[in-house]
Image (cartoon, rainbow, N blue to C red; front, side, top):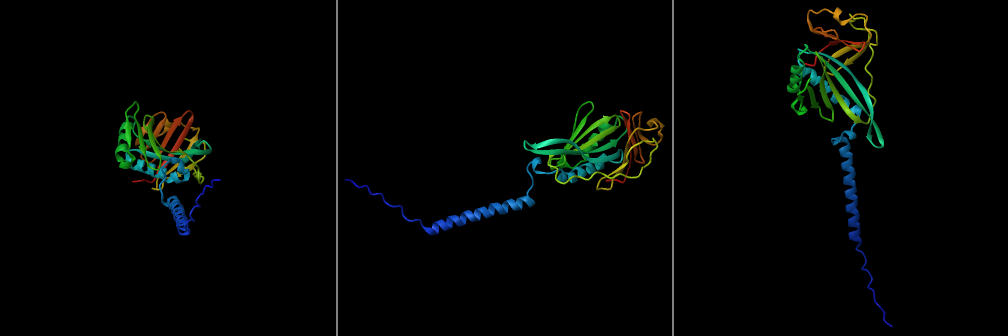
Length: 255
């Protein structure tokens, strides 16, 4: 009878085992510490990692910079930070998209020059560009995944939109407050709201049917005056669109 001898495994060195456990523990602690540090100091690498609440200040700064770049030749009116759509951040996580609109009134025919001033006057990091077309359009990147777009709404009016794209909501943005009626030479019926930018620009606005047409407003001193559009140097402006008149009075400055 043949007996096969199988040598026993040598006993494991307890010191080596303890060393491996120590290395694993230290590595785990480093990974945890790195994750905690990044959560407080790291920069997001995708829009989906951010929230609407975090994007709000970037949107405000983009519009402030647009007002400065437009210069005193344009009459501004700013509106609220409003939800524009629901969306899906991921296939299993819903989100929303918000944007804020800035109107810039300019003499009819001067829209292209205004877009050029915006492209030249915005911070270089925005990579602002005017795109040829009839009419021309404008794009810029305000950072933090906030896109800025400009277009000629009607002759004499350029609309600038700073949008968040699809993100998680985070904290619910507060609605801009109602306010007492401002100057109303057109007799517009509606709810008055006040919209502000941190730089000090303040717009009081109302939208609704008007008792008097825009042609009843004085032409002297007007920046633009057509059947559907009006703005003057005092900051009073109006736009008629599909039976609704939006009347604004803007004070303050970002310059």
